Image (cartoon, rainbow, N blue to C red; front, side):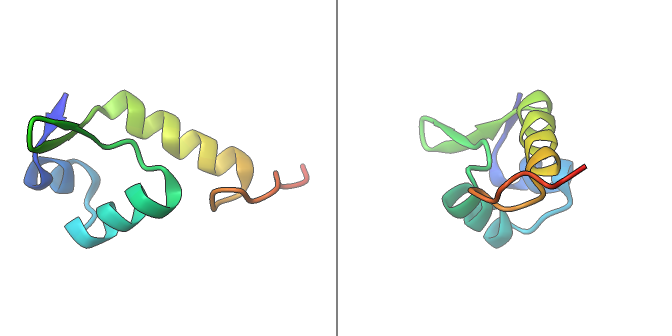
Length: 65
């Protein structure tokens, strides 16, 4: 489990602003535990695999193989 913006930033290499935008616009897997954001490496890997499979953005059609 990765808890807190700073730890999530360190784990992903992404800024807090980008993480928030991805959460809001691209369903990046961040939940709240109390008042702190939380995720896990497994959820991030699953989210990334889904984006690769669909060719990028949320709602985008799958890429042709």
